[in-house]
Length: 332
Image (cartoon, rainbow, N blue to C red; front, side, top):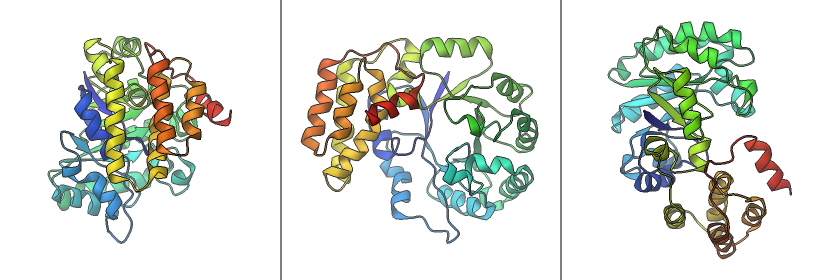
């Protein structure tokens, strides 16, 4: 089984990726948080730095683009080819209101004719000859009946892989998955189809394999952010040791200290990491509040050390009701 690491804005940037790859085996490809190319066809320094190969040693990285303009996709993808990348991914899954209002991400799914024309231009472009292009998609915006049309469009093009998060945009991340829609994508597919969503434990993977024995790739997101060693555990059955997790945390924070300006930025970035990591510890509500209220690195470091010293690791990260759980902790 091949495991892919989903792009997660604010968490899986280049610092996190390269440290994660050092500590935890099992991830075949890391997908970068999306870059949204603008009409001036210029990479901002911050966005470019995250994608530079030298910032991602030991990482097989796939850049992801968010756009509904074929000319912007072609320019950005060709620029990434020039930097040595052999594959890029198109984001058709982001459910954020600010994104979908611009008819990007999952919002582009509302315009199937325009999406078809977009893909036709992209795959016909001489500038992208030899580049592998994958799509990460939801199954529709508001209704499962949208999927048949979308799938018929995708199958017209030589995709490197189709990564399917079998939810609607209206489901966000906690609504029900739609396995029948994924089954439709698998049936007679001319390209590899990847499952994305709700694999948080070996039991989840076993259930997925029983339902879809032909699936060879799974994209992990929230579960892998909460349990950084999840891909390795799914492959070997061996759980990550507490000491390894603590060493990983220390290495990430040290690398962020070297590139971020000031303690406020460092604490903010590490709080994003802990919004998932705390789900791997039993009874983390009180400790997470302490982490979120920390105003200096010394205070934050003491709070994180207390988690590692005092709380037992859960066998499986607490993922059901994730959004409500974290929001309740923050409000409390």
